[in-house]
Length: 248
Image 1: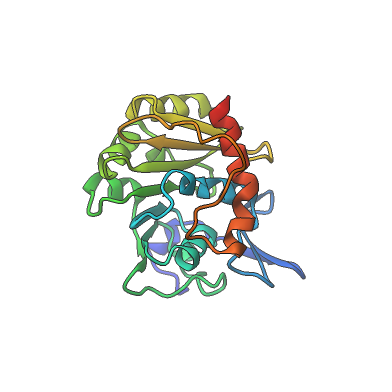
Image 2 (image 1 turned 60 degrees about the vertical axis):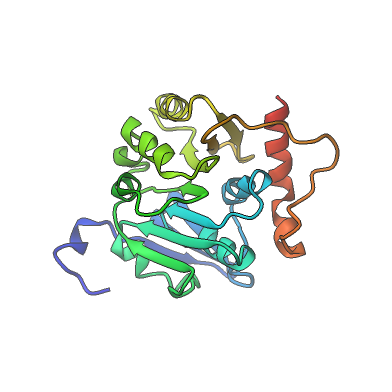
């Protein structure tokens, strides 16, 4: 994209392409997002599949808000497999948005929008009241302070519909991981479920407005009826992780 005074303040990501995948990086050490070239709408990273676990508690949301676009994995999956949902994605880095075509992110339409903006300001202004809020906002330095403060999580709780769900991707290795988790618990009156993503690198935190998460009925975990076979197959292992965390 053309360099402007405003865009110059943001780190430019780069794309690393192999024979089978295409990945978004700020540094070669960490993957921000990864897409399978033969199946660009699949969720290739384990943590993204775990984040979609909100479907166990709300299988048919009408409105989904996302903070952080990255390579658009979660946005594409929701757009394709939740056709009734309106989806708003907020991304602060214009260089990330400029790569949306590279990662097959759909164009804006009547139910899907990518907005350039600050996620903290987005939740503070509460221009929308989503059923689900997904927070996966990272920059070249990791998780920004403005997206992990007590005020931010308080604003997230106020923004959601009654019984709404926030899903946050946290890094285990962050020096303030315990502090971030405690802030989420405080904002949501301890109605929180913490799920390891299975790769020992991310912790997915589900927080519910209004009341705690209930245990799922015993027996085989079944995906929501509105999900097609392709989507359901991707999420079953993550659903099992979440059910196990609820049981524990």
